[in-house]
Structures are given as C-alpha cells and as structure tokens.
Image 1 (cartoon, rainbow, N blue to C red):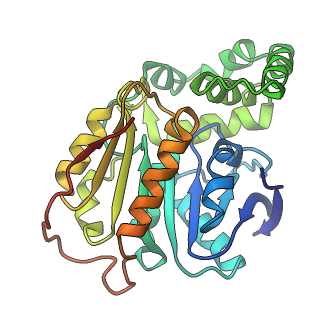
Image 2: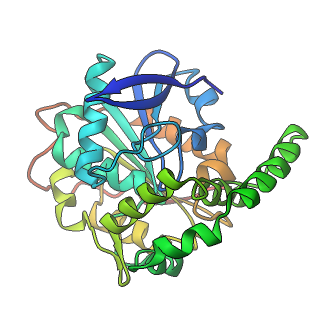
Length: 302
C-alpha cells in the first residue's frame, strides 16, 4: 500500500495516495471511509495507470473542519487537488458517497472527466439503508458517542490487525468496522453527521443525479454493483443503465456494498477492460445533448 502524502488546500490539510504512471484514475471513497478502502486495487491498477486516491475532507487523515461537506464542495476539492498535482483530466472512480461525488464532478467540471466508474453509487435513487436514515435524524449526535466508544474501537482494531497479519480478509465486515471505528473520534463523528445530513434524510437519499444524467451521455460510464448490496440496492444501477443505454453494468453475484474489497480482482478486471475498450471523452464532447447509442448489456461475472 502506498504511503500517504499531504497537500495544503486553502489552509486545510488533504491526505492522498498516488502511485503509477500513465492515464490518471481518481479514486473517491465512500462515507466514513478513506483512501485505505482502495488497498487491494491500488497495487494492481498502478501497474498500468497513475492512481490518485484522496482522503476526502472529514475523513481519514485529512482535516475535519467545520465547513461545507456538500457534493459540490467535494467536487471542487477534487478539482483543486488535481490542479495542485498538475493533472488535467481523469477517469473518476467513485464508491457509494464517492459515486455521488464523481457524478457531481462530471456535472460541474465535465472538461476534467474522461470516464466514470460508479461502484455501488449513491445519488441514483431514493432508497438507502435504514441505519443511515435513522442516523440522519436530529439528536443522533447524542447517541453516536455511546454506540462507538474508543475502547471498543481499540479492541476491535487489535483483533482486525491480528487477523490481517495472518492473511485473513473479512471483506464487507472489515470495511464496515473501519467506518464504525472512525466514529469513535469526535471530529470524525461530527464531520460524518454533516456529510450524512447533506445527502440523506429520514426519507432516504435527498440528492439525486438522475435528472441530469443526460448531460453526461457522451461520457463513457461503467457501473459495478453487488446483487446483495444491503445499503444501496442493485435496482439503482439497473435503472441508471437503462437510462444511459451506452453505459455498462457489471453485476457481481453474492457481493454486497463493497465490491472493491469483497471481489477486488474481479473489479480490477472490469475497470481495466472498460478502460481498454473505451476512448476517453474529449473536453468538447464530455457534455452535450443526449443521443441514445447502442446498449452494451448487463455483464454478470464470477
């Protein structure tokens, strides 16, 4: 796993990982995650591409200011990081909340985006797990410290480290534990709630990109979903694929919300095939009127 690097953006520290050379892939993690979520993908993808994976503000080792955690603010942060690294255009790969950020970036800065890869993406439908809906309600900030005390986090991290050193991988459970453990930290917990409430309310996801998908119709898009996703249902991926006939949809049987952790080799192969078989959108064609090209169909792997 590559080491974290740091850059000062507008007075706040942003952590990121970067490896490899060639065409640039920007990896955007999900809510309560960090760049470490890509630990199985970065070593493989960086053999053929340059990979940039930030800890988004409010996450990981990046600062957690009392500020704007909207999708638009995150898209602007990604643009500013690319500017700081002297990177012009990228393929954006986003998982869960990161998928919503990727969609927002394609909407705000289409000239910076060559392709989109959306993994179990948020922002494509109302439905979301009841846990996130409950945590978005007023007063949850009083309950969270009791649900995620530091001593439980430390004990769990010790057990996870012991298992990891023996080569045991827990997949989705490991990723869910990382998200849970981050809530034991006060600044991370406050940032989590600000982020959550910017995109989810008690009725479900409050932000949707579906009405603007046509604006990215000329942007090559790969959707990756597990058919056992308990957080964001596969139906969102299917509906998006139907709305964007030129997109590709890969469905992973028996996989949950974290395909890049649960089935990393399959995800690497899907991404690599997509990159090899599609041409990056040019700045002048990244946004335009919708024209329905041929459908590539649903691909079931494994």
